[in-house]
Amino acid sequence: MTTAHEASARPAVPPARRSTAVTLTAGLLAALLLCCLLSAGLGAYSIPLGDVLASAQHRIGLGGHALDRVGESVLWNVRLPRVVLALLVGASLGCAGALMQGVFGNPLAEPGVIGISAGAAVGAVASIALGLTFLGNWTITVCAFAAGLLTVLLVYALSRSGGRTEVVTLILTGIAVNAFAGALIGLFIFFADNAQITQITFWQLGSLAQATWPKVLAVLPCAVLGLALAPFYARKLDLLALGERPARHLGVDVERLRMVLVLVVALLTAAAVAVAGIISFVGLLVPHLLRMANGPGHRFLVPGSALGGALVLVAGDLAARTVADPAELPLGVLTALFGSPFFFWLLRRTRRKQGGWA
Image (tube, rainbow, N blue to C red; front, side, top):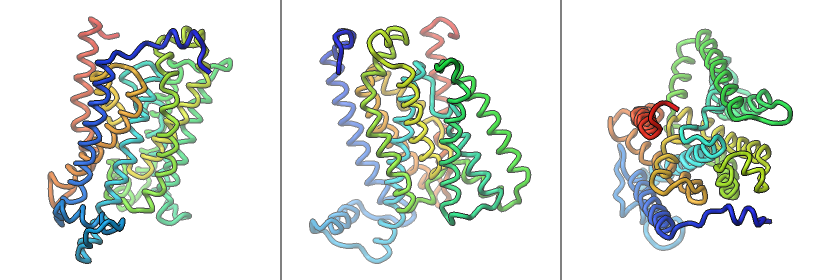
């Protein structure tokens, strides 16, 4: 139940900003739909946009027509699983980035800060280097997901002191765990053979090339659960932005909020990394761009970052498949190539606004 203090502390949303949010949402949805259609049709085997729509209509019983055998197989068994997986992974990473930046009160935070990506990478690399096959083709995915969640729980447990978790302690613990995870990955690579090293390298570079409907179903429950929970914490994140002490006075259980949201971030990120490998900068750049466009309010920022992340990953995957055709660029490399210069620009912009390094 909302208290009088919470109601008075909640800033009124200016009509201009509300209009901007609606415009941005509509634009993101339109761009996302267009990118999905283009991604479904473009590639080594080209399928005209009209045929993509006709096949979709035929499948759901609204007329249209089926394509030839090869066209149907390419569209429904290769392209669409990849598009849907890009949607889920991108939305998960974008939403996780917005939550992380809200929890830490820092627009330069991203999910990898607390070791989720590095932990998942350790699980995947270990399963490859040790030749584990106890779950068949699912072994790498399950090991990566489990290791990512365990890493976050470890970081959180090590960061707690006196029943509380300070943000600085959490970040420093995450840095230490990231370094340790990097050492473990290097150790596994050292003892791996050439075939395993090739597989490890491919996984670490990030890619959706192995997308299948079973992989979509594997990430779907985690993504849907995390994306459904996140918007319910938007108001509390807005109050937390006032500072921890004011937020506590306004009825926010800061420690519980931080714990719940770190777990939601872990769920979203570990699931995404487990099926797609390490794809950097999506969780950092998308929320920051939307914050620049429409301000820091999390009611738009959280769902908007999910839409923006999905758009970036669908567009990035399309570029990865087509820019160097017939070869395919690793998606993680592509996002890092574009994300790194933008990250440097953000740092420069922050320095100019603050008159020096904060």
